[in-house]
Length: 228
Image (cartoon, rainbow, N blue to C red; front, side, top):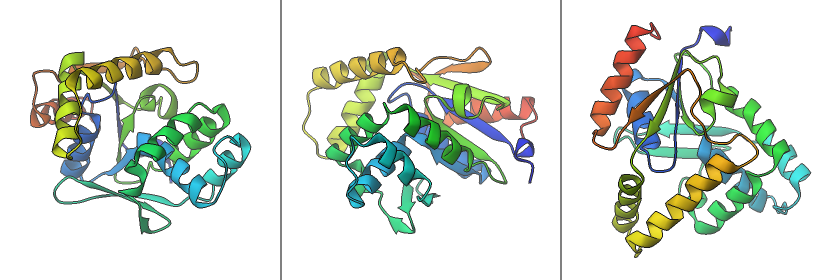
């Protein structure tokens, strides 16, 4: 099968810009596969702990990746289930410690390189929606439609704050905003695959747009470019 003939839409952008919601809705509308690249680092971190591999052992963590069988499944509610070796680990990878370990392994160059190959393996018929921070720049540079989704920093912090509140997590808005600012700086300034807008990306500001409005824009762009 020639992967170059399989349509793909990459959606990159900073935290809480709406990438996940938009990607899930698009994948559902088109009945395409979905890649939540950010979840992969959590999955690797979870698997390392499961296999009693120390997070600080970069080579052992890297070697683990080729043994992982990962699957994303979308429900009718647009929620996403994540399976590792056919086991549902959706809740397990969302813990605080798993997130901290994921951040640590994301700094390993060999792990990131190994994950590029894994991510490209998700490109299968009928098409793929790839959500992340370096999908268009690094993983799928040949994509014919690259979206860079952004939003005002305060708006993104508000979305994250409301999300945490809905989960019953007691947080202060100021703390959420500070955390978001710090994460933005880390994403943009890191040495490996920093967050940036590629020259051929389409910039969409979702600050005052609903999920459906953003999805509609992307579908219109897809038709104009004969993506499907």
